[in-house]
Image 1 (tube, helix red, strand yellow):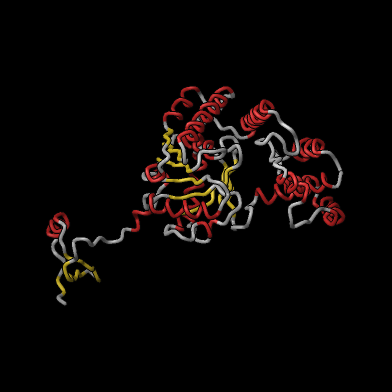
Image 2 (cartoon, one colour; image 1 turned 135 degrees about the vertical axis):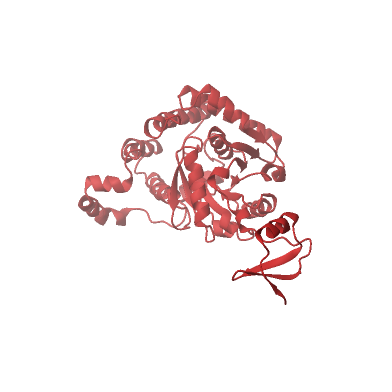
Length: 369
């Protein structure tokens, strides 16, 4: 092997400009010229896979249903180019109609202006071809049903179709990201971003790292969420149910237990939650509440009450029987309550209007300030 001195600066520039076909290695100020490199050789450029927040321009949402259309609306309103993907044109057209209706309500409540709503709609594209929908995306959100096999298959396809720098998020409410991303290459660029229904209104998004998720991906996704007005909550461990659902289902288990045992009616159980501690929760959380009430008081109550609270590890019959009977809630017209089609529509509209009032009061931040 011959060791040559480093060429003069002007010679190096000429050589680099013309693209020498020699593989070079620099050691201690000397450059060694080895065998000619084949024309197909390209050095691995790690920097090409790194994404910066300022470079994030295009977002794709896979699944345009209850969650997907609201997620897409949020990013479009935040200034991003959005592509919605689903398996049929009818589903995608329905999603766009729902977004248009949501934006009209946002204008009515002063959350946005007619001009911004129109601009947001102009940023939304629809495409039922997954490969075409994500081929230029910087960030992809998967918002499909909670079926692990389905999500694993879609993750593999996204890994194949997306550019190398693209971050992939799942909106799962409790499945393992580590398992979901086990068959793909860019595991460090995957993350859970769990939105809450309705996603275009509820301010918090839970952000959960998998076993291989990089800190860089976590930081970028949190920045992205903040840029569209969301409040990311970082979950420090990948545990089933994350944080919100663990708390929600602890309450749900006890509510079902009280209903089963005849402690109160379904109407009064809901009213007890909405009109007591639930009334406080938008302002102070459970740990703040105990600080304000006195930890000694809460300890005394916990000592006698914890042993009385339901600790079942299986869903109660009162829930499974409803499902077996086809009483699935508002989508079938009956669950714990009954709904006519008109009542169902009004229930959702009324819910969203109250949520928007609360959002504007507690969280709304003027984007022009």
